[in-house]
Image 1 (cartoon, rainbow, N blue to C red):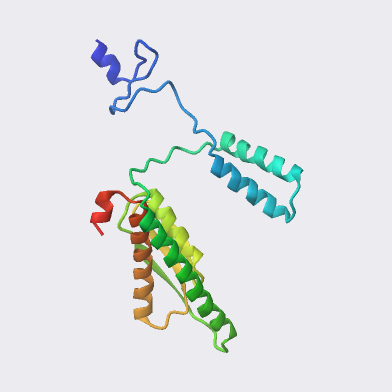
Image 2: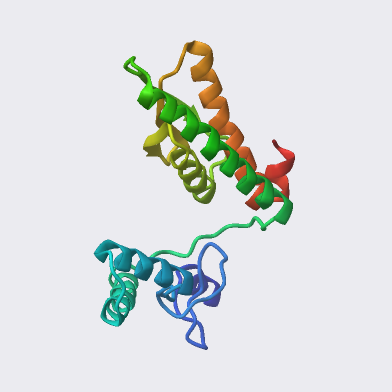
Length: 198
């Protein structure tokens, strides 16, 4: 009788709920506590929207940030990877290099007399992690000249606009740049298995 009860997810003697998938017992639905970093970022964004700083804006920003967490509670993100300082340093260094290089290119296009062309490409990532997918999309969108138009979570696919590709080889290089960005994310935050698979 007790085995059948545990399989259906009924409360145990101490009030905890047994999960039929073998996960640890929980006491009803749990809400994720507000993250200090998220509250700071949301508050900073709120203040920047007003283009001025005051105590009233900071306080209202904090209250609105907490309200967002209460009304729109986010699920806990499960990630088995770990932060690798060397990989993180390489990721940041390459991002700065790409920002400078692409900014110079975009400025050159702005002052040129020809109309730049554009193309949309599809890139399927190797990882199926939501965290890796999000971070890769953010890295690609931060670099001038490319922006992610659509993200398909089901198959970890990014659709992005590429500014002024010269030929088919340039499109292939743009797709490879996205995969390289994903690789840098994995080397900075991925699991040992993911890093070995690169």
